[in-house]
Image (cartoon, rainbow, N blue to C red; front, top):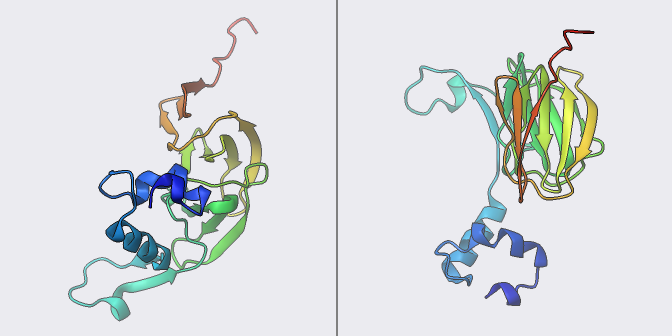
Length: 185
C-alpha cells in the first residue's frame, strides 16, 4: 500500500515510522510491524538492582501498565516521576511505591505528544505536536502556569542549557531566556 492508498489519513504524517525500508510502500513486513506495534503493551516498572535470573517476583517493587505514553520518555524531577501521554494527560507518580499523586490534562494543550517533558528553571515544560508549549509548576499537585502556541508543529523534545530553553518547531529553532534584572531599577 502506498501513502495515497491508505484508508487512514492519520498514518501519512507518521509514514516513516512504519515504512521500515523507506521504499514508499507498506509491504507485508511493514504491515505486520504496524499490527504488532498496535498490540504491544507498555509498562512502567520499578526494579530493585542486584538480582540474577528471573527477578519478577523478588525485585519488581511496583509496576503500572495503565496511562503509558507511546513516545514521550518519563521525567524524574524533585522526587516525583512524571509521564505525559496523548491527550495531554500528565501523571505524577511517587517513585518509592508507584502511587499516583495526581493525574490530569494539561489544560490548553490537550493534544498529541511526541516530545518528552523536561525540567528547567524549577518548572516542567511540555511541547505538543500541535505546537502548544505548557509551563507547569511541578510537584505532587502539579499545576499548569501558562500555555503558549507556536502555530506550527513541534516533534522535538525541548532542551535546556544554563538559563536558556530551546524549542524546535518544524520551521525554526527558538531560544528563551529569563530577562536579566535591570541594574537601574
